[in-house]
Picture (cartoon, helix red, strand yellow):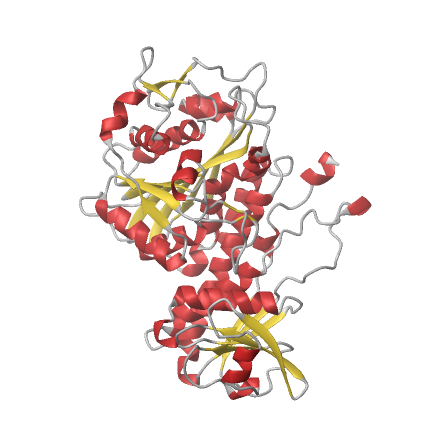
Length: 513
């Protein structure tokens, strides 16, 4: 069965674009369950064939997230709550569209009248609506009911094949551009979910490199893949040290997107631990183990985001480092007390092999500083401490440059992927001092997310840097609206929003990769 699993495609969403269109209402759209927005104030749309009192009596008060099937003249229609239209924003549209898509769960073709609000740009509304519908109906079909054939069976809830938005003729052009962007954002996030959901026997570091090469070939990106020998030559002791206990070889994947006349250059670094057992510092035998296939979510988010940059016409040049290995206990594994040498010569005493993400990323951070770049952004499921501090829906944010951090926060708001800035407090730096090496890979029992960020900061030099700890929101245990259960793809759309609107922080170097 393992051989059959290895032969399947770990990212089906990449090969499955959805047809998206925008047009004025015509009265003959042929939708089986069209969605009609309803606000808590104003007139109830005539298409519903029902008044507000009757809606309320049925338990529908038009709050965002509500959707209900009604019947008018024998044909079903979906009432979609949008709350107060005067306060409707893109996040509300995304939630409302997701509620509609879930309500129309049997339909491959979704037709929604685009929600309107006085301060709502039609392009932003259309983007959010398409994202909401696609992400709400996401599922991972690769291994479902494969049986003896080794291939998934047909049946079950259909995937969305077409999205139609209806809006006034004067808004069609702007909304169509937003809808196209929403399809690309949604497709990228779905790819990141695919990758993080794939079992570790299906998505090894080697297979991740193959996926990156396939994506690059289809999207027009450059890709370099570094095997163990190449990593030894580069002196990437962090990645090699974490890989020491594994039967599967490591891979470092460097991807490049080079638009003509780029407006800036951002380097992305992603943790790609394909499965994290904790190594010799073995994790407890609890439910956490089953989620550790998602420990490559940072690398997955970068791969997925970069896959759609050319189609989006991004003006920022991007270099991505995906640091891929698993972290396993064995007779060859790195031991507590071992000292690793990071690219550039910094020595690190390993006192907890479960603090491995910072080790694999340190090599890439050094490599990132060895060429001109305007900013470095890393993303990783790095610390359980960040999950405990901020919960399962908010990522931790650290960094060295106020303007870059402001841009990351703005991108988080636009994507509705929330972050909260935590202090990169140098008072804790002394807890990383080692008696036998330049650094320890862990500090004391308190402030562990800060320790991890301070460790990474040692390797970025003077380049503006931001660190996203997504240990919490990478996994969703309480699904709602477009946040489906399991691996979330968190950070993919945030990175896209950042890269599409990026401006060089003050004092940053200019130039491309």
